[in-house]
Image 1 (cartoon, rainbow, N blue to C red):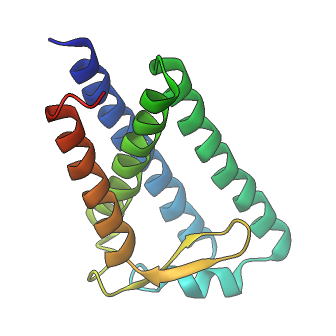
Image 2: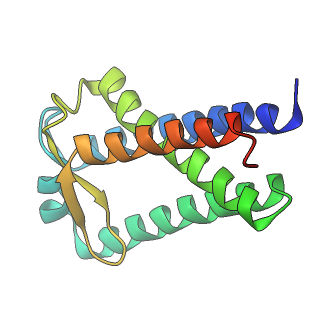
Image 3: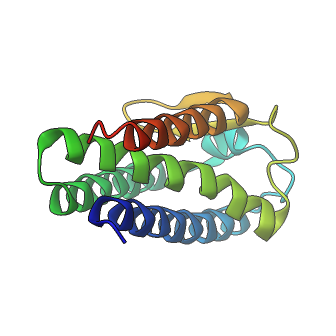
Length: 150
């Protein structure tokens, strides 16, 4: 199998595994906070003690660092590294919601409001937004690959 295609497949698998790992962590955090499975993550930010909110921000920063490092290691050029970062990020982000839905049936719909990211401040939007952006990113990179852009 062609090297770039194999890299894309393996990075997708890596992103999906990271997504499930993060989904499990979020399920445990929700349980530790006493949140109902159906409760919005937006409400969790309001309940979160500030100290733990900062710790959670470091977990998010670590996630981005892991995605940057894997893209850097796998890519040969800056263009490839950027594409591989976006590809892996998109799979991680998309399958994070798939994982949460499998584990606790959350979110209940694509209209559910979520806290997308905490850095530098909470980003709040309906779930359809990151799902849509990730899906478009994956489709766009497939098109670039098929057009032999990288």
